Amino acid sequence: MKLFKQLLVAPAALGLVAPLAVSAQEIASLNGMSAVNEYMNQQDVDRFRAWESKNQVTSVNQFSDVRPTDWAYQALSNLVDKYGCVAGYPNGTYKGGQAMTRFEAAALLNACLDRVTEQTDELKRLMDEFQQELTVLRGRVDGLEKKVGKLEAMQFSTTTKLQGEATMVLGGVSYDGLTANNTLPGTNTPARNAVSFNYDLRLNLNTSFTGKDLLYTRLRSGNFGGSSFAGSPVGMSRLDKSSSDGTNNAQQNVFIDRLFYRFPIGSELTAIIGPRVRNTEMITFRPQAYNADILDFFTLAGAPGAYNKATGTGFGLEWKQTVKKGQPYLVASANYVAQNGQNGNPSPQSTAEAASTGGGLFNAYSGSNVTVQIGGRGTNWGVAALYRYGTCGTNLRDGTAMGAGSIACNLAAAGNNASTNSLGLGAFWQPKQTGWIPSISLGWGYTGFSQSVAVTPNQSSTNNVSAAQSWSAMFQWDDAFAKGNAAGFALGQGAMATALRNGTPNDSNYAFEWFYRFRVSNNITITPAIFYLSNPLGQTSRAASSTVLNNTGFLVQTQFRF
Image 1 (tube, rainbow, N blue to C red):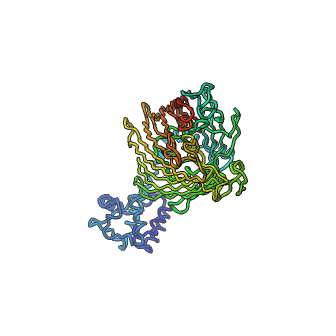
Image 2: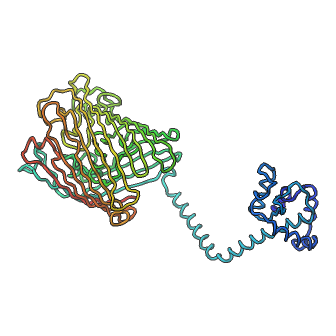
Image 3: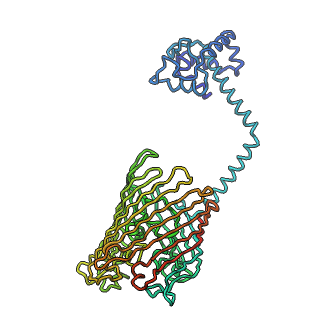
């Protein structure tokens, strides 16, 4: 009856409304299709069907006198497209304004009902044929509904997704050039050269309230504090995954490693703010395709002064140009991080107090980092320039003791204007298809130092440094020997003093790294790696000994992601 009512109100299908209303009532009073056929003149029906078959159309656009602006256009289009029971005249017209006879209306209705009956019979036949499969699917759907209900009842939040990463590292470092009592030359610090087994655990809580924002919380724990991979006393031996709560205890505490909120402002701009955020995580991208995640230095795009991973209280903005998919686009970002922003003492009275409790936002003891990046990206390439300004208390991450040391807060100096200005230039390219050609990542960094303290010639201190440089070249083969695996090689020099205010620098160092990553499954990888560091202590070691300190590290890093 629903189809008949649609036909009744569509003049494009039935012609004039008033005459057909009477015919429809009379036809409806008859008993089924056989009564309709008896009601009609059978010869007229046969002639109409032959005419209909000859002039049947498959699209309403075949009618030359039907326009989209006609008020019944949609009704006629539905009859043609869905049911295929509308015919036209041999000259390609429909003549929608012309009256119909009762026989023509009944024949049209009969043809439409035949089509509907054919489709219904075909659907019933398919349902009977696949009855067994439909029963199995119905059972599976019922089971899934129960499981979904159980998961919804057990989940701790409807807005938060939990992600985790557990990293285990087995390895050690051997040294060449230690003093007779097994200490590092120039430091009197015992060498950490025993094989150790350490871990780093990260639990990420990703919360979204609108589907476009992100409240990011990371819980972290690790026991690298006493390991040779901790970055102390040899900064260049620090691993990307090494972490601790600042002690050498075997059992570490769980601490808040990140806490910030990211939200969009319009279609191209994103804002980030939080009490525990990192400057290199508030930039649009890191200009390198190399991702071994072994030595921390080789995660910094060759510029540890610019990409120094300063972490603290901060906020930032990211801009990404909107373009068509696959087209190159421009990016820009700017952020501020105060490493001591959680403290409330803006005027410490001693150097020790400045290092431990001095801080706040936007003052001389905040440990401020202002970072700005601009760049461009394509489907398989990227290039970026990054500038960072740092006040006293900030450092240059990985390098020699002189090239990457912290800038001290000199309380005696007028204005306390110690600071650094760092620049990083980076670019990468990777083949669109994996093969013998590796991805190539290149980076270079420069830092200028400003100090307000007098120094003596060749003093082995950051107070004597006026400039430092660094660089890296990294190569990675994806799908090496097997899909999902990767191999890579990297070389470079960490942040080293290249100019002194008094004296001549002799602070150069070199770093090499090789790795091969096995993908055991989508969630487990095993990465054996070795690295070699030449003169990682730089001028500090050379000033104390005629033998240059070198060290070789080996490790097996296993990662579990869940």
